[in-house]
Amino acid sequence: MNQSRAFKLCPLSTCPHFEELALHFDSTNRGIDNFFRKECPKFESTQKLKTFVLMDPIKNQIVGFFSSTVGLLTQNVKKDDGTYKVDTPYINLAYFAIDKEYQGTGIGRALMMEFFSMCMVIALYTGVQLIYLESVDESVNFYKRLGYELLHKDATPEAYQKFGNDTRNIQFPMLRKISDLIADGHSPYIDNVLPIDVEK
Image (cartoon, rainbow, N blue to C red; front, side, top):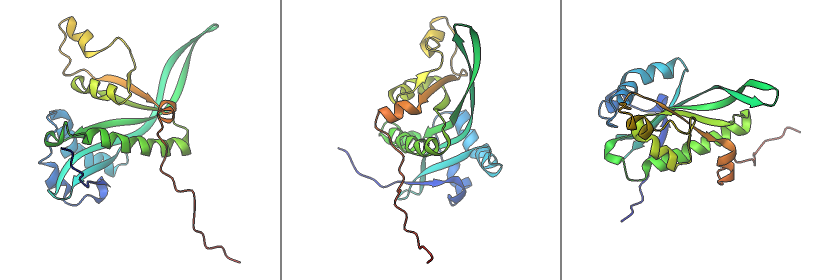
């Protein structure tokens, strides 16, 4: 039976007792968990990444988090008169994880929907065209269900594994186009009615 719960999404900088709470966060991916506990605050303080933390206020527990930044994706584009390098501005979803206790409950999808809404606002003001991420092997299908596509279509975990390759340490670049988000009905949550005190 579905149960409606209120979770709180807050910037890392406003998350009380983060260091203590982060020790109990377990996504089952050691690399992601180590980053979250040890490196995430450093990246936050130097403005290299911005992190948002999803809290369960009833249990006072971190449910999930994501870290993002911006960048340029350089791709080779073939045209009739040759091949050109094209730079596309993107939002980099550097980290995204849910605690194992909450995995499979729909929280990951809900958190990604919130991230999409944030991206729509950023795209509206800056013109970024893509969301870019590098997925661990076990998360590729999760991202596919949310509309992401592999940058290299044939470079799937299964394709590597078919030839006996261990994919646990391979990252799989994936994209989600802002134009596709718009086509799917996502929109920025902006209130364009501004109460302004006008001086006479």
